[in-house]
Image (cartoon, rainbow, N blue to C red; front, top):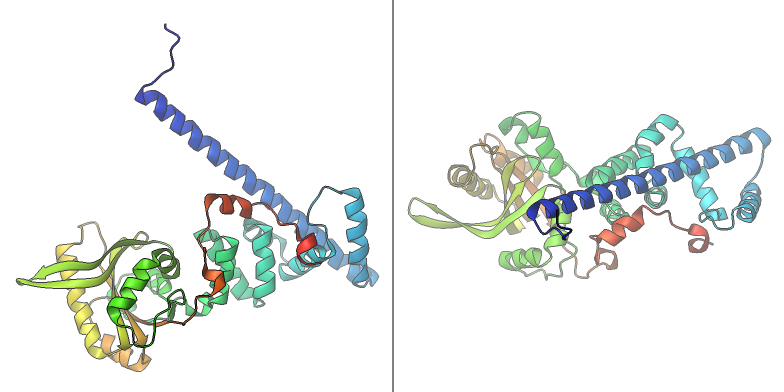
Amino acid sequence: MADTVPNSKSYFDLLADLKSRIRTAQVRAALAVNQELVLLYWGIGNEILTRQKQDGWGSKVIERLAQDLRLEFPDMQGLSPRNLKYMRAFAEAWPEEPIMQQLVAQLPWGHNVRLLDYVKNPKERLWYIQQAIQNGWSRNVLVLQIESGLYRRQGAAITNFQGTLPKPQSDLAQQLIKDPYNFDFLTLGSAARERELEKGLLGHLRQFLLELGTGFAFVGSQVPLEVGGEDFKLDLLFYHLKLRCYIIIDLKMTAFKPEYAGKMNFYLAAVDDLLRHPDDKTSIGLILCKANNRIIAEYALRGTATPIGVSEFKLIENLPEQLKGTLPTIEEIEAELTPPDLSDEHE
């Protein structure tokens, strides 16, 4: 057999497979290291809490511990007094070790520190942990979602999903729709028109998809439909990977009006007939308005046979600094798995 360099499809398939296995193993190893570190920090914090209660030690013991631990482990990051206080707060926030091990320890330490800083309600904090794990949020995206009040907005839209969609799809669809939507990455004036809003959203598609949430795949804008020999266009068309259906978004730079529901009902019927694959679920409509009277929206959707949601969107004039570059690169994702050295950050 000739000793030649293989150049066949079989070889490149093998190479691709091995690369994938190595990357997967690297990620698993990094996650395992992160989990062990978080468990260590919880254990340290729990010991500090226990000893302070039993022996009546004050806060100065943390300064002493930080100094002595740094002498013993000079190359180890994260042993500053500030980080030891976070460890104590971390153990105090999660007194039940099974919950901490099964769920909380899946997040990098930097995520947990931000949650301690920004979220005080235990139920709300647990919700953000679940969402961060499920959606793979970076630390910056987690902070962004907390600051945008996602916990209060998620699932808050007026919809008729309970009467138009089967369970559990109706519950999932309801939880995916927010109210209001924050389009604070746009700088549109109060006199902007719908086409300008659409153009702005498409120009910031990454931020728009981040605000819509996980699972939304962009299909197109001004999507043409021919019905009865006449031409119609959909503002925005998405496909949702979890719901397995098309989602039509109609943009309105005015307050909600009842006739908007009738127009969306027409669009949904047309999309289901003309675009939907037999394996797809029933299409869903989302009307995004500048303002929304919830009582009017509830009346408008009552008795409507197609699934429709109505939400407001919010705009601000200036682009917040924290929104710039919110979607992480691969390098940034990998960096999230490395615990931050808080010794210089907080001292």
